[in-house]
Length: 157
Image (tube, rainbow, N blue to C red; front, side):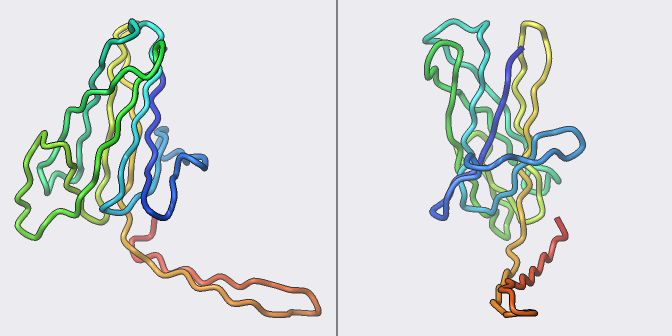
């Protein structure tokens, strides 16, 4: 059976460094527009030096964008690539299969790989967040240091 992983990287770091969470049975990662999705598939049934494809779909489909991207062979049965996410312009003028995925805050990117042996679709989800605010404050409470965290999450996810 094949495995599909997708994580997000930006100038601030990479979600590949921490565990994804599960949402409705799918491995899910949070992201913001402008970040890059790194996609990896392990499928030992595929010969070395081959290439495989995955499909990426944005929902809701307001942008209408989707990409079918080729994953290059990294080593025996391991494949990978990266796709940049761009903020969808007001006009929703996006080009399908142009190598960049147009997303909007609050949308979801579904990444699908079809394993042929046994035939099964592997799916990973990237949820596009809406920028929020995180503030911290250090206080002493009852002679012990405490950090108070205030999180504003506009899209409640």
